Image 1: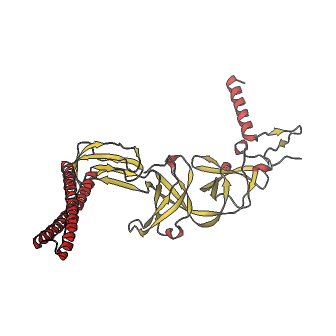
Image 2: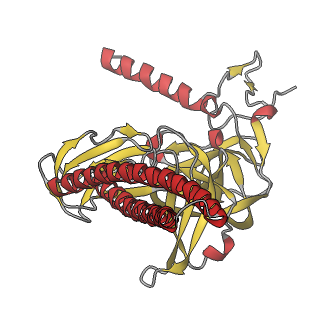
Image 3: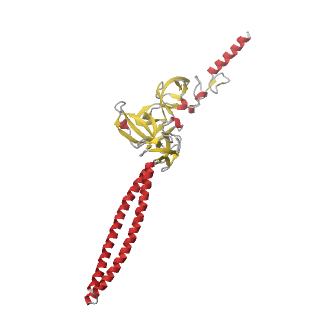
Length: 388
C-alpha cells in the first residue's frame, strides 16, 4: 500500500468514526453501544397558550421640545451654549443687542427718578400746607370766640378768617398736585415694566431643563421676531412614537405596560407605558399615532429607532427553548427522538420569540420529544437512556 493511500485510509476511518459516534459513546466488552442521551436532556412537546403581540415600529422623541425664537429685532452679541450642552431652567442662552430697547428702558428709568423727586417735593409742600392750615384754623377759632365777646375788631376777625380760607385752598392744591404726581408715577412704572419686558426679550433663557439639540444662528446674526434661534428638548422624558394599523388600535389601551426595544441603546427589552393614542387616522397609511412613555435611561436618545410590542390577544402554539434550536444560516433544526428511541435531526420553521422561547411554525408535532440541553454534544443515531 502506498503512503498516500495509507494516509487517505486513516483519514476516512477517523471521519467515519466521528459521524457514527455519540457523545460519550463507548462500546462494551460485548460490542454493544453505551447510550449517552440522558432523559433529563429531553422535553415533551405540549401546546402553550401565549400572548399574541402586534409589533409597531417608530422613533424616539422628547416629550417636550421647544424651538426658541426672538420676539424683537436685534443683533446676536453672545451665544452661551452649543449643541449637546445640558442646561437648567432659567439659564441664559443668547444675548441680543437692541439700541432701541436699551434707550427705551433708560428713558423710562430716568423719568421715574424725576417723578419721584417731584413727588417728594409735593409731599413736603403738602405737609407744610397742612401745618399752616392747622395754625390758621386754631387762630380763626380763637378770633371767632373773641369776636363773639366783642373783644376784637371786625377787621381782625375777617383777616383771621381769610388766612384760614387761604390755608384750606393751599392745602387742597398741594393734595391735588400730589395725587396727580402719584397717578403719573403709576403710569411711568407701567411704562418701565413694559420697557423691562422688552429688554428681557434680549436675554433668551431656557424655558425648562434639557438638552440643546440644534443651534440655528451664529454671533453677529440679526434676529428678527419669530426667527428660530435654538432647539431645546427635555432629556428626562422620552417617548416612542409608533404608528399602529387601524385594525389593531382598538385593542390597545392607554396606561397599559408593554415591552419596547431600542436596539441602539443596548438595553434589550425594556418596559414602556402607553400614554396617548392620537384620535385621528392618517388617511394615506390608515394608521394611528401611539405614544409610549420610556423609562429614564442615559443610553436612550432622541431620533433612535424603536419597536413596541402591543398585546392584542392569545393563541395556542408550540414553543421550545432557544437553546434547543440549531441554526445554520437561514435553516433551523431540532434533535427529535423517533419512535425507535434514537435521536434524529429535523428541519423546522421557527417564528417569534417569547421570553427566551422560540415558536415552531412547522416541522414539529405535539407529543413528540426533543433534546433541549447540551445539544452540541448530541449526534444523530444516539439512543436515550442506558441499556440495562
